[in-house]
Image (cartoon, rainbow, N blue to C red; front, top):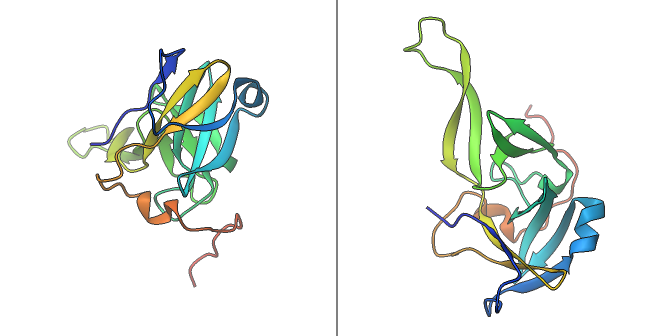
Length: 160
């Protein structure tokens, strides 16, 4: 479901729907930028030489992913939502959670996938500039609910 984003170095020509979002030099310093692509809030990360783009707001509750920490979880590079600590794989948008396999007699905690939850987008680098092409918006993804809404970056209140 959805498209896995890839980094294409110096393509012959850009996809006609690609949108210029910044310069390579900008991301090398900040490691992330937030922007709007065709009315959709997006965050672009530069981590370990790779570029990743996804919807800016977390699929769970709209948390600002550009403020999250990047962690390696079970061999996958993830952004951790600053609001509720949801783990999202940068490359695929897959949600991860830690649980126990009840078939395992030792009941040791392990990481499981929730499937693709966060929409990822294609990043193209050409002539020192970074472009984002939105993924197929006809396929539903959980993060779509928050993608066009404007939220403030305050943590959400605890339920009463």
